[in-house]
Length: 101
Image 1 (cartoon, rainbow, N blue to C red):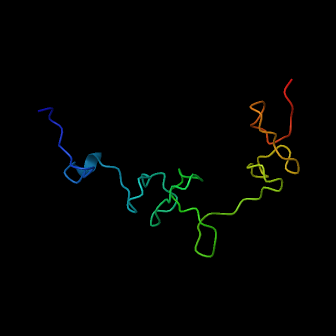
Image 2 (cartoon, helix red, strand yellow):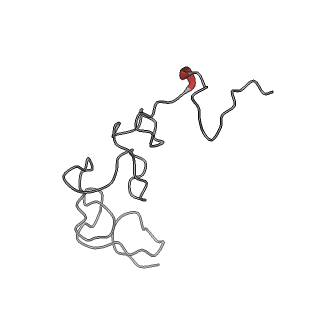
Image 3 (spheres, one colour):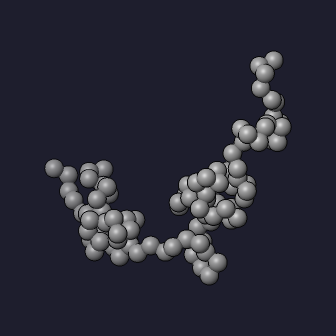
């Protein structure tokens, strides 16, 4: 044997707690980085790294963002918040329209 405890279908309960990461809501995000310790991440392709369900509404823990030009960049980081990004694989990280050189 390799000296490591065997696991069945991802059951890590046999591993010493000393070596386990904590994940109280069982969403796969370690509690050290999970921003919503009692709510599970819903893995919908939007902010799937924060550990919070991304559903806007009264029970949501997600702060809504403002994207005035609807280009996917939050106005706080968008260099051109009133003009949408031109997605052409050229300077697509600034949130501004552009054309290929």
